[in-house]
Amino acid sequence: MGAIVRSETYYRRPPTCTQAKWDAATWPERALIYLEYVLRMRIPRPEGDNGLTAWARIDSGRWLAECPTCSSAQIVTPTDPRMTCCRDFTGWTTLAMPADPDAVEAPLLGLPTREQFWWADDDPANPNQPPADPGPTDPGGES
Ligand SMILES: [Zn+2]
Image (cartoon, rainbow, N blue to C red; front, side, top):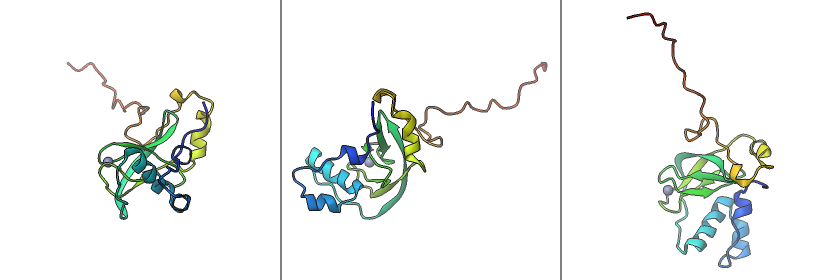
């Protein structure tokens, strides 16, 4: 139980990054600094937006988004809704975030982490889709 994890609560400055460099970076850039350290690899910095959008969701108590190209997931934040992929280096992807993320988080805060899930209504991955329109009722009797 507890607060929904965002970039701000997940990514920590690695010992290989100076405090000044960390402080100068945005949260999506800090995610790259952290991932470079954890993955022990260099990640090219994005050169502008890639024109792609990814849906942000809450998944097991974390704000998550998946790369629209390869589906690798990353912890993200509503305060700077961008991500870049550390697998295929596609540039900055814009995240579709709710207008009021705090209101989305509020009803989840008292739940166990395993029950902290949320999808945007329009997200095609949302498993809580309204039932399909059954279409006109078959009047029957025609045979
Ligand atoms: Zn990717």
